[in-house]
Image (cartoon, rainbow, N blue to C red; front, side):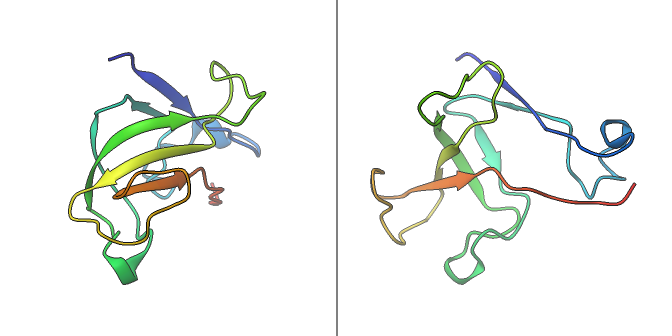
Length: 108
């Protein structure tokens, strides 16, 4: 499968120089592909079990109409979490959870 390199958007003086440890565990690049087995690294939705260290599989990577996939972060990553049986999201098959890009701030 082709691998998409997701490069974060850093803002602030020297933000791109911060190591993963100094940036609250946020890497500058994430390598992702469809069918990749990944681990959730934060508590996304604790009430239904989507918590840090939940294992999952990437089903699809989506962009909004007009976004350039070669230069833009995805709109959402569609993920199949092991054992998820919660809500069915509009436009998704049962068991698929859309995960959206988030803004994280840290002091460096």
